[in-house]
Length: 480
Image (cartoon, rainbow, N blue to C red; front, side):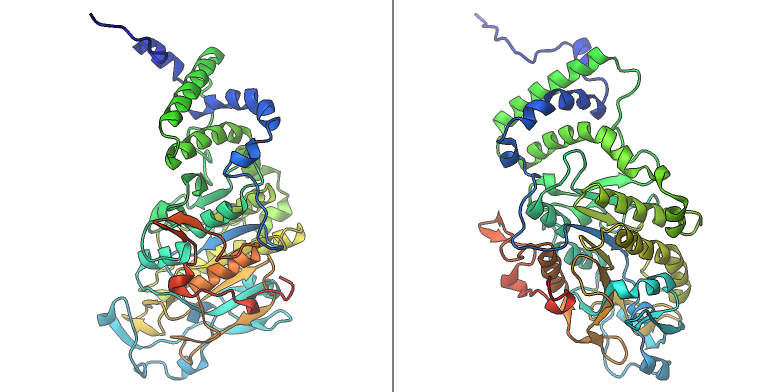
């Protein structure tokens, strides 16, 4: 005799199709129906992995905007003038250089660009960066960066996660893990990608690694719909919406009961709930139509050359203004990877990015947001002082430059130095692990106390057992 067991989820084909029509947008009603109950439940703040958390110590910075320059910008042509290189141009390098393409190494290649002092600080920058020069007194320029790899993928992992090996969490994820989110209806970690494509290594640049998946970056588009499949299709009736929400809630609850320790499942359910809240918040946060003509002109939105990057920099400011904790802005692929036509490529890239990058600093400052926001402009490594082929520069892990603004970093300050040719950092050297420790410190987080259990030990972003990472106090204001 066969016993029939009642299945509360039993569905025929027709009812299943009816109840599941509509996509992510149908989750909105569920959120609004439960919002009062959630607000009245004190335990919610203790179980929500994105609830705001106190930092380890008081700090000015609350958020970060990363302007990542994929490919490795040439420090010699942009930030680090070398008169000796000009003197010795065309001669062999007096020693051995490490190159990615070592068989293509040629003689010393000076920068064709002029350098000039800017601001009261007298910061010396390339003629390609006039707009960055206009905010020189607001930035910290680090000329003595180093990393451990001349390979794009490994160097990208190093500056994003602190490790050359895949599987570690990006520092954007660590920041959100340490501080939580200030807004329920927006992701805490947003990534603004280039409409032309993703950077090298794609989504691994904003992975949560071994941290719970809820801390990974959420990709937004700057053209068209910011998030695909977010809105409810107009043809879906309210009854179908209600049915799908009920079904999804039951399925999710039952599945979570079976797998209570699944980080991916918890993150997926959390993302469904977030999607409901995002329906109205995201379009409002990214709608730049309300910005003044002056602001649009500041970011270069009236110029086809700067409009695309300018729009994403403006979106980043709006997101931080709305309480988003970490925003990354990327270019496609690796445009700064100037193995050939170095000078011509830099002219085009700086023409595209210089004005919007400086505009972001100016705009944050005039709105009173720069003190609480760290802006970082950086690539994964630098370029060599010798030529690759007739007019290119190969990768250089021994020296590169980056700049930071706001969030307690010293203004109008140049840190460190490279040798006479710009090949090696030799004074006040800062590696990527020191950079991570200092960024966390500026946000009120102790890089040795911010831990997560992984493979039998408490792991950290900086992994000081291996790296000996140190906060660099000279980069910070004395009171930070």
